[in-house]
Length: 187
View 1 (spheres, helix red, strand yellow):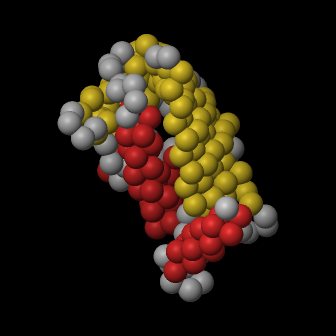
View 2 (cartoon, rainbow, N blue to C red):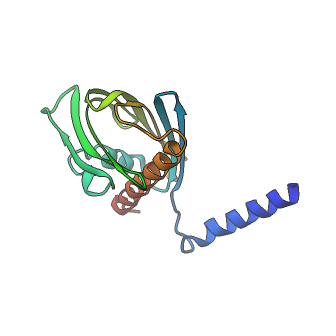
């Protein structure tokens, strides 16, 4: 068993090393989706070779984020500058046999350049709250991005396949976010 795990680890490391050209660092994305009765919790962690400032700029580019995140069709601030920010987002979650539309207005609280907290105040989520955290890794090595959200949707999420399908959707969205972050980073 130990030998099989060692081979798996070696193959996984070689696959990661060969996925990018020499010298190019790639983001590492981990998505965990848990279902607890009607609630769904998503925890995502990303390590990426991008400065925390660029990560923050992409995350707070509220009016443009729908142009590069799949499944998001509308994202716009619906109030003027100042606190609290009110952010409207619409889109869809894609499942193999059907699509679910979501529509949410969230109150957003920013603590530059580290934390973004949000809580739904209307839309088709019975409950939704979460947080983004950005932190520097080393002097100039990149950033660690953490995302947590707890959602109680008003729409049906398949009990057995739902978490796996949501994980796929979130992974696609985070891949798109990190591509945009890397595109904007001047390194």
